[in-house]
Length: 161
Image (cartoon, rainbow, N blue to C red; front, side):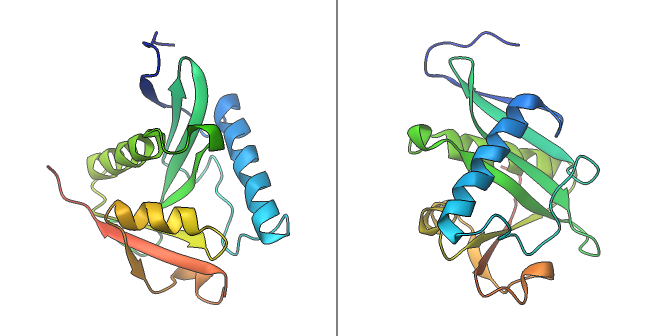
């Protein structure tokens, strides 16, 4: 692992099966379960190692603090879905989420994906504010989220800078 300076955000590509990434995803699912009052609030197909094309983990001072992944969307040429974007609550507002999101956008462009979409929910107003601030716009619910009253979907067309 690369050495980092104090408080510097390090973004690393990791396999979906990476233990630190798996732990972060467990924390995310636990937080979501509390917000929605159920362990099974995801209307879509849960991401797996077989369908996540890109996965990154963010660390500060060598400690994992955030993650996010990308999954290609079937039948949607050039589109990918952001999955399991998460930052530990003590690190929110520190720039970690922006760093993870930018890394995912870069990786999407490297793969030739020109549009990212995502699903969040009505019990996650902090997420909706974040994505709107980062240039994502509300889109109609797509795929498995079409019939979910709790789903809020966003999209962004990517451009190379």
